[in-house]
Length: 207
Image (cartoon, rainbow, N blue to C red; front, side, top):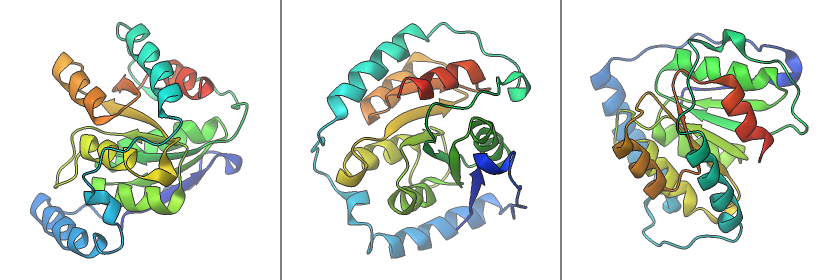
């Protein structure tokens, strides 16, 4: 399982080398992992639509945020990120199949004092969510394999123990169709890559 942790208290963190698999190898590995993990994660395939208490408050606030930030311009890179300690430390799960982007985002939130955990595909992301119990999930929308970002959000919405998680879609797609798909899946906010550090920090500060 390709996962790593960044600790904000320890500075920028230690990057760990990633073994990059070929597309076919990764898809095959995910298929095998999925078959095994469904035995211990029945909620991943659940079809009930129960929404736990607390979603109404978070969803209403996030809907306003998505509307107000729709027209924000995105800077070139993270290097202009404001270094400001958050009022409280959050557990943040970063899910992205591109290791460099996942590490960059984890390092960014680590600079603000948060504890970040990385997963490099949707299946590992769901397993990590069950173990790490994040308060915020920053998830790419388009990922290879049978579990993309929208399926991750749908599964987390059905997980009673994660009912208070803030779900943020982080994607290179800035079109209305992907925004609608993300909203239907249960994402509370939508951030376009490359990530605007100030926009992301406002989302975290408002949580």
